[in-house]
Length: 234
Image (cartoon, rainbow, N blue to C red; front, side):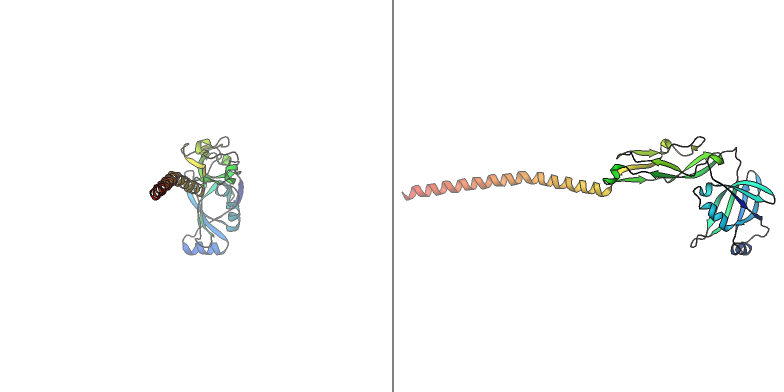
């Protein structure tokens, strides 16, 4: 189940850089609410409270009830703009949602556990760290966890093999690779070096044998020569 929060808002009549700067200095964040075929509404929200919501495990997928002039609007934070150096919130778009209408959301994929092969030098190669899912707002999970403790080299995780909660569907190709357990590059390089050394040793072995045979042959010829010389002296 998605996390929920409530955020008080204020209507924003002034637009532009200077009014937005004054709001930020006062601890407010300029924002706008849009969606569900309604007109966009410029608002401001408390910066500290919004930052706390976005720092939760659900992050931008937290269902937020915005209060404005006595009305309540269910929304999700989208298009979050931050200062490039300080990370301060500069502007946020809030998307109106309905509890009974499915939406698309980005959900992180977390790998848990450690395969025995990793302790022997294998590595987990994760290429997808979040997937797009489709679900009703309250059903969007905070994250998707995959237990890889029993994995062996060559095992893979595909989008289609992820276990999603009831009411949640992946909006990506089922055959897309999420992660796989592979042999580390260092181990592969060591194996290649060892194979080259074994091949070189195998090639050198016959040459050493031939040299030994040639040495024995030369020694025999020398012995024969010495025998002939002895016969001549007699």
